[in-house]
Image (cartoon, rainbow, N blue to C red; front, side):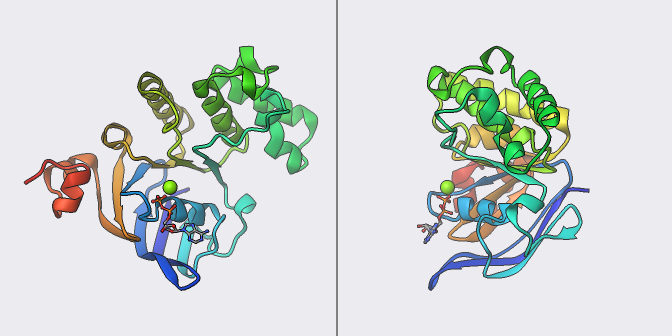
Length: 238
Ligand code: ADP
Ligand code: MG
């Protein structure tokens, strides 16, 4: 069971409240999408779930266990960033296996998991290349590969496709949806893109100024937006 349950989660930077009390349930295996205007706290909430930000108050359960005070490497989550954050001097294979080397996994195990991730992401012909020799879409696949090798129960994506052109975004969207089906894991995905939210999500969470404005299935939000703000993001204006 790898659902995510947030209760009364708050986060302040200094005196500034950025997440102002978020309650949210994400089911095991769900594809959950966060949308909302720039600066509303999407990345901060995602980083908090990853354990990269310490929350000011509230609790977070992942996979049935209280993870509120657990470090990022022990939460069973892996994050894929918008800027791919690949190491330029390492090959694709080395980049994909990096996290496992850091945590002291045996070489054979690293090779096995790297090969599995490479097969899933069609990276096999590229394993000996450096990031500078890859296209944007290929780099994004490597970044996803780095998350896959860690075998997380929950994948977190922070606007992973926003640096890609429109055609590639459509292709990568399909690939991430397929990955979600193949792995059967929980995914939380931040995007600016309404089409991504509508086509990929089981649940869409609309955030505004550190609060959840509305959460529900794409159809619910489309047909019954609670207010103009939600309608502006996904619904049909009423
Ligand atoms: P989004 O991802 O929705 O664009 P963010 O979560 O990045 O929003 O940011 C939410 C708010 O928190 C913004 O006002 C941002 O300036 C602020 N913020 C984010 N990170 C920090 C930080 N490390 N220190 C201070 N303020 C921050
Ligand atoms: Mg952000």
